[in-house]
Image 1 (cartoon, rainbow, N blue to C red):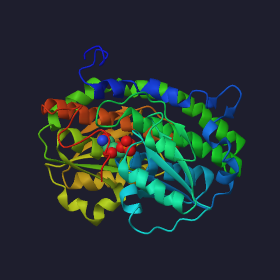
Image 2 (image 1 turned 90 degrees about the vertical axis):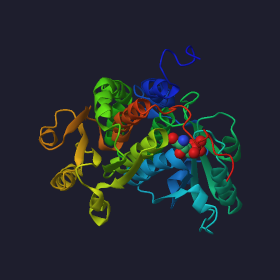
Image 3 (image 1 turned 30 degrees about the vertical axis):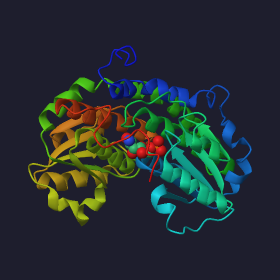
Image 4 (image 1 turned 120 degrees about the vertical axis):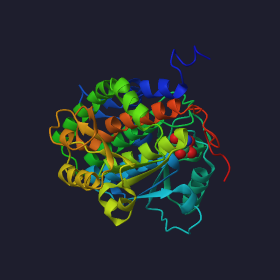
Length: 369
Ligand code: AGP
């Protein structure tokens, strides 16, 4: 057991620390920096279809759905194709509008999630093209799709998904770049820049992992909290959802992820001196607005834990705790900003004596409805 865990106390921690490697593996053979070339075997035969797509639907559950939400930002931003992200369990029962011109992307770590499989069957029966993004080779979803790309993150044992999420986001980033370039919405220069930056992500994640000891200290302080709020905007909104889900799953603390600006439409009522608020406030196009959201939390005495870009000199004066991550392009930030949130939930759960790798009531893959 301890050999399998590679010296780590839990599989989850091992998998969090594997991310520089697993992200690299998910790009291997796909991002050829020197040649200035992107490759994804799975979409080659469907390049035309993607290039002419009028709409892309994404179906998934849980953490994979969060990766889908990141993809909505990526694909709309880089490739200018309208994207709808759907919970597979809702999609399959609500008589959705699907046409032969649609491309449906199904995302699943295990490739065995019953609702995602049923959503694929439905979309297939309406003639849509199905593209799968799975981690487990030869899984039911991988076999049910027309084409796809494996994430190559390696086996994920911890029930709480970590490295599979970042691998999914990496593959979806590559896909958005390829489709954007084909459609002419992503220039050669911008493509080149993003390729360069994507190739730097493993070392930036490596750097983010150095925050482990610091995050453990923050976990000590908040381990007995009964609620958490996670806020983010733009690309960091799905990261807020993912941070909250991780905490709920393994520490059994109630947590909610919210788009920061939506806070004033409800959750702000919850904020008092007992409410930890994790704000992902990296330097991007919504930075100034997130800073105002932090001020709103502070005015209500919420306890702010902010994930910021290295060198930020504004937020440290406002937040109680600041976690600095390396700078990267706005579109790639989820790959970096999610890491401290994974570590925070891990340490809180361990300090509370929870079974981190096999949390109560949860299964690694949900193969029944
Ligand atoms: C993630 O931490 C969860 N355990 C869960 O939400 C999971 O992402 C979901 O069940 C989907 O699983 P899949 O990716 O294997 O389809």
